[in-house]
Structures are given as C-alpha cells and as structure tokens.
Length: 190
Image 1 (cartoon, rainbow, N blue to C red):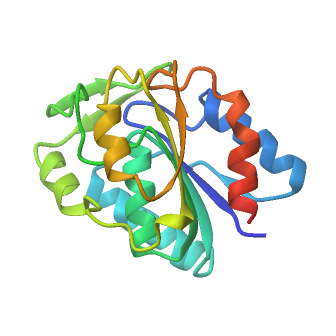
Image 2 (tube, one colour; image 1 turned 90 degrees about the vertical axis):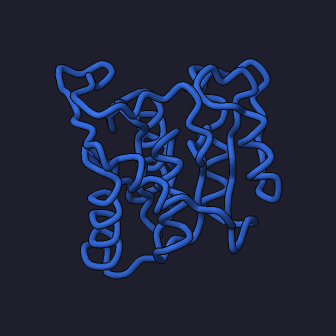
C-alpha cells in the first residue's frame, strides 16, 4: 500500500487536528502515514522531500496531502517526484493573500516553537511554483469559499481541472475537517 505524506502549512504542525484525523483513518486500513516537520526554507523542503521519497521510501510511489503552504509543496512534489495522488487543502499556489512570509522569527501555531524565515524565502517559493498540472485528474482539491487567508476564486481558477470539493462556509484551516476524511481516503485509495 502506498504511503501518504502529510505536509502541514506555514506555522502549523504535523500534530494539528487535520493530520490527527487523517492518521487515524490511515491506521484503520493499514496505510502508512508520515507527517514530517517542515520548519525549513523552501529549498530545504524540496531537498528533504526528494530524499524522503527517492531514498527513504525507496522511490515511491507515494500519495501526498498538503494544507496551505503544504498544499503548495504537495503540488510541487506531485509534478517533480514519484507521487501518485495529491490532495490539496486550501493550497497556497501563488495566491499568497494574507500570509506573512516576512523575514525573521515567526511563532508556530499551538506550539512553543518558532520558525525562521530567511530573506530568500519568497524567491525560493517563486522558483518552485507549479504553473501547470500534468495530470489534473490525480488531484483532489478542497477549497473553502470563505478562506480568510487565500483568495478562493484564484485557487478555484487554477485548479479548475482537478476534482474539487467546495466548502461553502469553510475557513482557511478547514475547522470542520472530519466530514471530508472519508472522501480523501477514497480518492487516495483509487
């Protein structure tokens, strides 16, 4: 069974509500679930994911689920590494909106931890930005229509050829995430 990588968002963490629910769902069916910490620069994330998939996971294929900036990384991984299916949760695909990528130290939400953003962060993100999806049918996109951080219309426009689940009253964090777990699991099990 293909392992799934969960890629958390900027200033989030791999033990937040969404990955906990997904981990439980994976454990029920015996599908490996890996949720690494991504408190590093975009270049370092790309290197880390490449090594993880190509070496540690023996070349894949894997599935990826990414939230916000993790969705950005999930799209990059799907287009550049042996990734079978990608699930994007309000992905930051160039629609940075209210995200504060200012250089300096930033507090990680819910943890007594900080992450340093280097001045080159935005340049590295622009270099990794996915501008075209080779196989949009291999993507499931969950988009909150009341996202207060990213422009949901920009996200919908870019991902129009993927399978889209619109969350009418959803916020950026997808606070009411539990009802979507079954559909996500069905999609990555195909």
